[in-house]
Image (cartoon, rainbow, N blue to C red; front, side, top):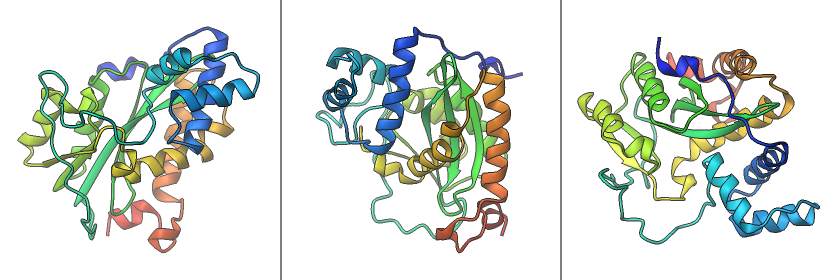
Amino acid sequence: MPRSSYYYEPCSDDAFNLAMMREIDMLFLKCPFYGKRRISAVLKSRGHEVGVDLARTLMKRMGIQAIYPKPNLSDPSPGHKKYPYLLRGVEIERINQVWSTDITYLRMRNGFLYLTAVIDWYSRYVLAWRLSNSLDGLFCRDVLREALRKGTPDLFNTDQGSQYTSIEFTKILLEAGITISMDGRGRALDNVWVERLWRTVKQEEVYIRDYVDGLDAHRSLEKYFGFYNEERLHSSLGYISPGAIYRK
């Protein structure tokens, strides 16, 4: 069994921080260009004593940052290689042309988990997903290996997070003959289809549930991703499900 199979115990925190992380999650989904200062200002306007330092700490814990170009974008993580972004102006014309992945914060009743997924850009099909209570790279590699059992893309796009720039992660892609592309740091729109997936998952599933624990979240998300892939009709796909498009 992969280590990630045991990651369903949510991270815990004090009640105030958890409540603020939920507020930040919903605010960031609506305004992803808000940084720590604006988020702090909004929370204060709602009567919450959240200073800039606490907003920064909670956003870091959630793995989110404002979407805007930041300085020193050319500097890779220590010991890790940064790859250029290769998708600007590229027309997506078929399945398995481009896949991408990302991580998002997932709130629980008494804690939080992280959700990752691999998506095919052309069909919007979710090839694999995983939950974890840690931001280490193991569950990211597990989900990548599971996705590769269903096919092999020409190009794989990620952000510059250490989970994806690590030698262990890029080695899996390079050994499969897959070209690697990476977003500019803080530029979530370079990975637009995953960002839209997170918006859909949170609005249609996460925000209308009250997950008791990680196992409850896993069971509910398993049903949702089955619905998303096989039943949910996408207007941009001509009202056809991602699974039907991917299997054509």
